[in-house]
Image (cartoon, rainbow, N blue to C red):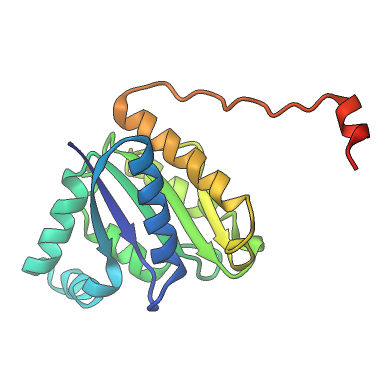
Length: 191
């Protein structure tokens, strides 16, 4: 079975980053059944810091790193701090071997308080994974506080990004979604 590592760098509990990670994993699983390995960096934050200082991972961190680097695909979600990814998220990436994600399909996502920080996806996350030579899906998912509970928008982005990741995992070519064209005369008669 295809394996999917889902890394969430949310710091709080409950966490909107964890919630977004869970929704993305469920959406990918609907497209392509996957064995999900959830990684909450909050649980290994001290191990990550110790690894940065000592150069050696703890047994628990080694298990997490092995889950991430051996998975067929990766979903990453980070909260946005100062228009970029969190320090915990970057510290975790820093303990990975720089060649460990080469060619791995990655879906990038972030959460934040306002829509103003949505460029974190293309300004910080996409270049980071391009440097690591991972294959980043075209659609990134950013969820602002106002997106939660909205009738649509976030769900559409989640489904589109999950479909793109599933396509990469299956080796399919992603297809453009069908247009929902409404003829002009029907638009005039709505009311």
